[in-house]
Amino acid sequence: MKVIVQQESFAPGQVIQTFQDALPRGKHGGVVSFVGTMRDFNDGEDVVSMTLEHYPGMTEKHIEQVCAEAAERWDIVDSLVVHRYGEMFPNDAIVLVAVWSAHRANAFDACRFIINYLKARAPFWKCETTTAGEKRWVEHNSKDPKAEVSDSE
Amino acid sequence: MVNISIKYFASLRDRMGRADEALELDGDSATVSEVWAKVTDGQSIPDSTLISVNMEYTDADTVLKDGDELAFFPPVTGG
Image (cartoon, rainbow over all chains, first blue to last red; front, side, top):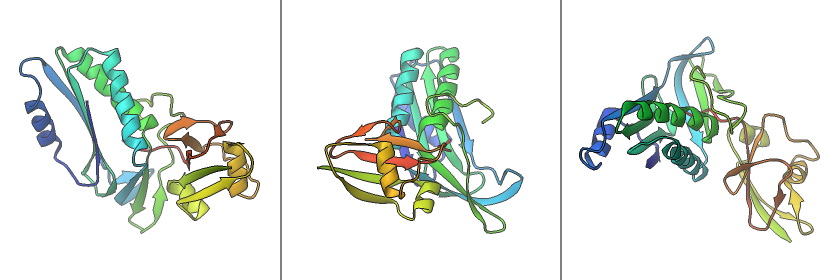
């Protein structure tokens, strides 16, 4: 399991390949990944940029806990999460979740679990800047940090 | 004497006008809600506010110990 919270932009495909190259050879039969990217619209307004704030230490700790829970629930080979903070722009990758397993069902399920619980628990806050120059905090992913958010949230 | 540190994040930091502070509590202990009342001149904690102590989620009834790091923040919006 590896969790990286960083300010720098990243190329998800390269990060997945580099991590996979270091895994034991022949033990995984597939990788399922989710990449969250930035939209240029939200709540009916055009968004030009977004700044993500986090709680250093607590953010990493809670993503690691979610990944550890996934590894207990499903038979997976390994998992990787990269999440950015700071300023980003439309199309930028915000988050990458990748899960390797011997058979795809476990990787699909664990990947979905990790992104949905990460969104509910990991302390990040999005502040959008609209085309009108207005800065506004995004309200919420979930009202309960113990609950999984749904795929549509 | 109980010394704690408090952090505020995102929109809650904007509202409080500060990102962090240190607080010395009279007596042996205090709950999270008592600390909030102290730093906001007697207000109660807004409904949607999340609370952590030493980077674990907790609730307003938690009793604070010397050296604890308390944080208040709005619902999270990562991912």
